[in-house]
Image (cartoon, rainbow over all chains, first blue to last red):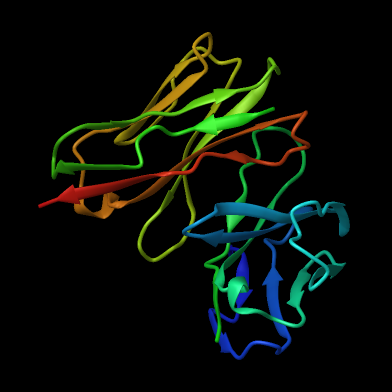
Length: 115
Length: 115
C-alpha cells in the first residue's frame, strides 16, 4: 500500500511568494494532520482534520497560513505571503480515527526554504 | 496539561550495545496509548513500537522493547544489539481521548550509534 504522499519534497522560494504544500493521505484514513518541524521549536501540530473537517487549527501560526481538505484523498497547506521564518520541514500524517491504538503515518515531509 | 518529557537530548553508544531511552509523561486519563517514533537522517518519521496503557505486558518488536511503568508514568525504549541504522532522533508520544486523538510529543532524543 502506498504511504502518505507529500509534494514537493523540497521547495525554495523568495519571501513574499505563495507556497502550496500538498498531501495525499493513506486510502481509508479519515484523519489528517499537518506538522511543522524546526530545530528551535521541534515538532508542532498546525492543524488536524477529521472526515475532511478541520477539528483543531489552534496551531496555525497566523493568518498567512491556511489549510484545506476538499476531499478524503487530498489536502493542501498554503502560506501567503511566505516569510523566512516559515522555513522548516512540513509533515503531513494520516490515521484511521477509530481508537487510541491507531498510529499516525507520516509522509516524507517537504523541506521549505524561504529566502 | 498533558506533557511528555524526554530528559536525554543526546546519547551515543557503540554498535552492538544495548541502550535505553527515557520518557515520562503526564496525564490524568486512565486509558491512553504510548508510541515511540524514529526519525533517521532521511527525516522520515517511522513508528517503532506502541503500548496500550491497560496492558501490563511490555510491548516488543524485534530488538526494540519498552519498559512501561504506569504508576510512575514512565515509558522507556530499550534497543538491544544496536546497529548503525538505529542512528536517529527518537520521539516519545501518547494519545488520549482527552487529547482528541492528537499525539502529545516529547522533544526527542538524538541517538548516535558509533562503529
